[in-house]
Length: 359
Ligand code: ADP
Image (cartoon, rainbow, N blue to C red; front, side):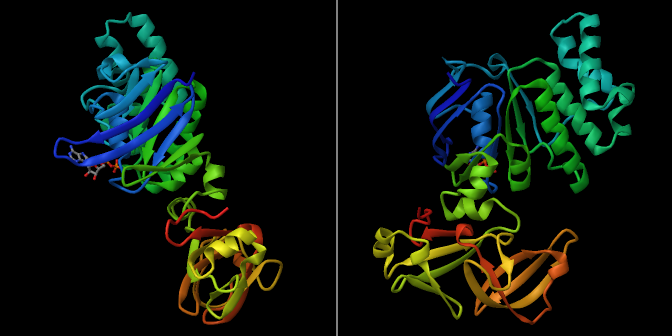
């Protein structure tokens, strides 16, 4: 029996706006789940329904097999960290961490032990006597996380907890949160719009768009087996390249290149899609420069960006814009005409209308 079950969950706000549609998900104990999607897709609304901060309009939410729809936030065994982490400014780190436990009337000795333990996990041992104003943004965020994990709750909810940090702190905190999760083993649901956070932290990712789940899967599954154009374009940086083309005689034109899809599509699909639009997708990094095994494409280099570990090459395929990610030592000249090859297994084809992947 999964620990958390969300069954056909819907949210219709009092103004009639239908923010979440038929959300179905089962979460195992100890999993790290990330809800990802662009702003406004319903991530926070879903998280807030799990927390008990928003009513569930339709559907059922189970914790450990028991219906929890009507349970108040305090009775769900949940701790939350939000993007704006309000610490008590006049209290030391120690007191900020201890506050919730003190309210619960727990013994001082027990509190001290818990605070010290959490401080150790979070690397805050040397800062316990400091006030929040004497901490960096990252350290303050760690105190906020500490306040949530110090109460031994079963479910840990985080809503964009890193969005107030600078890029470097975000990278550090990302691995720290993963490490805390590994140490505490608490079931975690984490909301972000950042696909990199999702890919690096999640056991499983839930990709959402306009209130609907698009796909649920491990980072590996989403990257290699996206179910539609949206997921393919959302996961990966830079995103997957897409070229829309009409299938004619089993072939499509990409710029002046004629690409024979009979190597990629079953005879059944070749027949089904003849005369129809297809979306041809390939990842910037899944190519080799020059000719080789697979589909070779001619293009013109418009711009190159050396990033250190790789170069992003912005290309024009007779009007179609794409990006290639290449070894910096192989950076082509700007304005040059080059060829690159996409191996067959790195080509994704999608139905031009439904945008669903064609298997
Ligand atoms: P996300 O977290 O993915 O950015 P939200 O869950 O916050 O998205 O919001 C989803 C949608 O619901 C948005 O279009 C938002 O404007 C709308 N929404 C959020 N709260 C309310 C509300 N109280 N009343 C009406 N609509 C709301």
